[in-house]
Image (cartoon, rainbow over all chains, first blue to last red; front, side):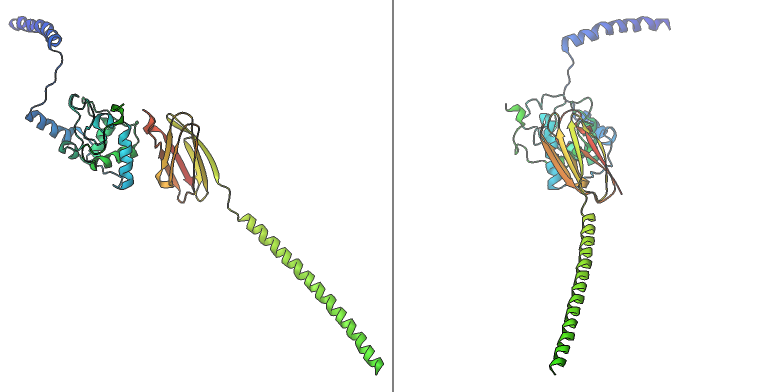
Length: 165
Length: 143
């Protein structure tokens, strides 16, 4: 029992000194995930972490609900996702960690409507995606889901107004 | 002969006067009945006149409606007036066909007649800040 105590104490002291030293020298850096990490996280998000998989959108896609969704999306989603939901004109979209995804991508579009609602309600920690429950009404969030399913072609609807002033 | 003719004429004149008097009385009676009928119809018409709308004034401000809870009667016309005391707001209640938008200091008005009982929840329809999603206006329609 006694012969373990010295190496453990030594490791503890080294850790206490070197870990902060390493952080000071290199900072907290995140590197893009490899293919395996991406696949594992994709499965975890789609099948375990993002809930509400079975709920259907109570709104029927129509010109009116699509217009509602476009308007609700324009309140502040556009700041990170662009008017088209594909980051057009967002200057920092690829500098976020992880980068803001294109909402037209397979990764996003393969969520069910219920899961998209869940993501908008709760956000995705620890990414930059905030939850909007209470900020937007349920009706508005469902209309955003309609809009996400009918996004315009990338770049076809201009850039967020806030970045052109 | 002359006397006979005169007597007949005289008695005939009395008949005519009698007939005229009787006709006049009947006419007067008919006019009175007609008047009563007209009066009755007028009163009943005024009692079935549509009731004036239930006038409700709602003030919107970040992040609530005042009042936020309203009760109206089914079939009763409602005149809903929305004003804002701060920024742009709106209210939409799909089931009642209400869709109003208002800027500060202005009024917006919706007229509707609820046809079904129930509780209908409307939301602010103009994004107004962090509590926007919690701004609700509940209308209870009772039978």
